[in-house]
Amino acid sequence: MSTKFERTSFELPAQRATPRTDLDTPGERGGAPDSIPVRRLWIEGIGLVVAVVATLVTYAIFIVHPYPHTPLNQFLATFARGNAAIWPMQIVWYAGAAAMVALALWPVRQTTQLICLLAAAYLIWVGIAYFGVLASGISLAWLWAAVFTLEAVLLL
Image 1 (cartoon, rainbow, N blue to C red):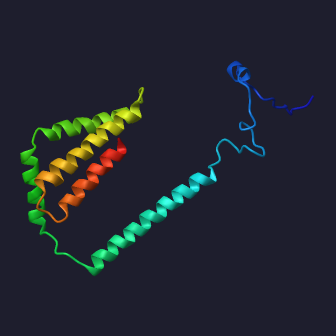
Image 2: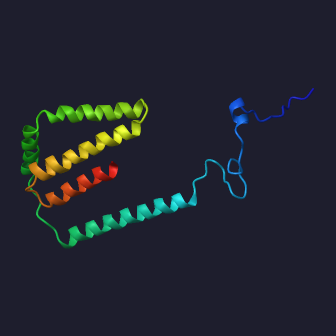
């Protein structure tokens, strides 16, 4: 009597009905299903290099050309004025944030599209309402408004 058991591969009936290709198994053309393609690694590496270079350039500009900072009380007063000017919208955006979290935790059909739509609406709101209208007096507000709006368009 032996205690060793031989394992056999077990397939569900649905798996047996589908034809297998050479890409399903490791071989010359196909790799293991959980391996990360080299192309994806290259793209992620290029993105990381671009982000690091952009960060270094930004800090170099701030070192070479410093600008005076707004005092803290004036900075916080900008938020107070903005909150008073757009009072009911805070409730709408809190509800939108709760909806995005709920959609992420309880996925339904087209969850990703709904989350992206809500996030894009919020980014457009921040770009136009805050940087374009309320904080238009701060340094480079037009640039931040354009960046937030562009980010919303790319998200859509």
